[in-house]
Length: 149
Image (cartoon, rainbow, N blue to C red; front, top):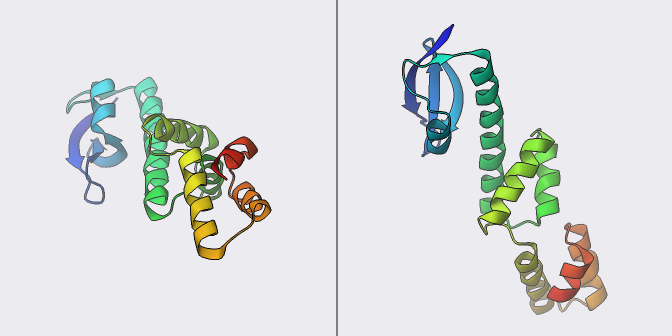
């Protein structure tokens, strides 16, 4: 049976740790995952734990990619989901990541729609119909877009 031989801080991402299983690099996890799964050096990794680590690692990777995409450019939740799936993330992990971002207040379609509408009106003098088309293209629901306009 495999054994966790080390938990090493990731050189690429602060707050992320690489599990070493039998001396080889394993999945990347967060402190939350380490605490929740009670991971420690010397713990045996059975099939159930290995499957759980793969699942948790996939969900964390989708969340981290979503954060990076939002740091680069504001997006609607539908647009973010579409882009993450295009990048190769699993749809179930993408849904969980978007829900987590919404719950944390980091992803808000209404605020995004207001920002886009304000920008388009001030910069280009866009009409109401043009704003609706633009917001729909960006994945904002009609009711949210109408409220923003």
